[in-house]
Length: 309
Length: 266
Image (cartoon, rainbow over all chains, first blue to last red; front, side, top):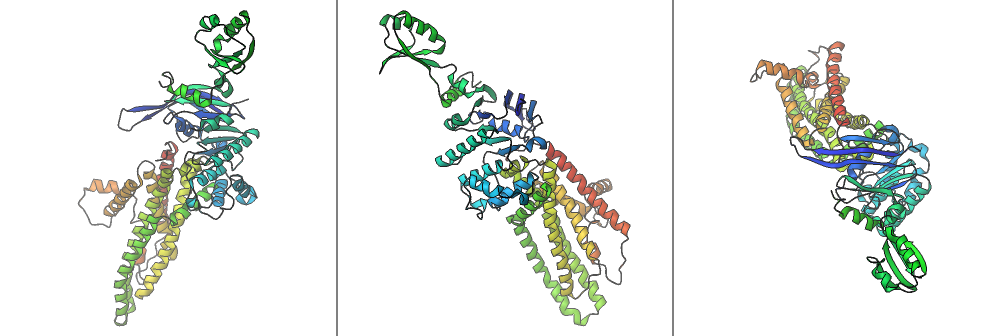
């Protein structure tokens, strides 16, 4: 199946006019997002996330490399017809009310608001903005603005939803509702490309993760694989002889547990550890991979010397 | 539909723009101050004959309307520059261009929104012409379409120029440049006796800068019934085609620059 988003060796260098100064915002970044995938695009501030999303939407142009969205160059009207986009800090015409703003965006999408029927009231109800139809958006709170931004992103039933910090400015209840909404979109088979700093939330919804740092891609892959890879394995045994703890299991963490002894060992050494336990006549009760959180993985990647190059 | 939506939205934004409201308020104040001379003329009507009144009042109306019309050119340039720049500054452009809207469609919508506002300005100006003539006791012999079409074409030129400049620079700088262009165009006009600049420069600037004099509707205001000599259709067509062509070139250049520039929140 053709990828929805394709970045091929994309580099973006900012140059100052009348100056030799150059800043590489993105260096040789390549990735693909498959249809129906929820792809989390992560990175610390200044990593190049917004630059990447801006290039994806056709607002910026790459210095080198190629970007394709639905097989079209970014900014192409045929691609944009299938995209719902929520920019970071969604801006709006303050003199409009929410229904008027959505009608305006419907017209921009080439659709007749009159023929849209209950689309706008339903969408406003979905983002919990019903009851505020007559209030000008200029008087909305930060959270309400974010909700109307999400509503306009979902307005034309897009196949690809690009969200830059969708839960920014929302209270915990609002964040939960947005996550539920994203879950619903995922179940409808929509592709979601998401940038967020709130990693526990991303972990709940994403099935693919791309981590960039200082313009370079440091990690990409399925979330489950990334969280399980490179970690440790927890082995629960009935006992561990002292000599075994000093020899084969040297370097591993051995500590008493409720029903025996808990051994934390590198995933690469798990077979060796289990076989030595069996050879010593111990009973291996359980063996489970220790799953790190996305936050731990993220911090490990961006703090590591390789990740920060 | 997309261009119309952007145009109507731009118009709604412009009529709420505080700078533009202030601009128009200033214009009204100047007009009120200048009314004094017309009211004096009205008092003199009893002792002057009608033909002489026409000769006296119409130049005053023409000069007042030239001022209002000049304000209009600046208003057109500022509105066009601000309509684009404010959306770039706030980031609204990102939400708009994330929709299936081409960049030139966005600019065209902005341009038409400005023209809609300027059309209302022209209609008010037309009403003001007749009102001032009535106050001064004179009659305007010029056909109304001239007083509508000429300023509209001139405003198209200045708004397209403002739009072109704002695609590469700050709106205030763009506005200042338009102001300099306006003054320069007035200085190099053939009817201006000012000769401080060399002939080659004057000729060059005359061809380069938009000819406000040629596109001025106020030159038709001073025509009285006695001296009325209707300009031929070819005269009008040539003058208006010149203005439309100038505006088109500026707009196409603006669209070309805007097409290839990065759109970041300023």
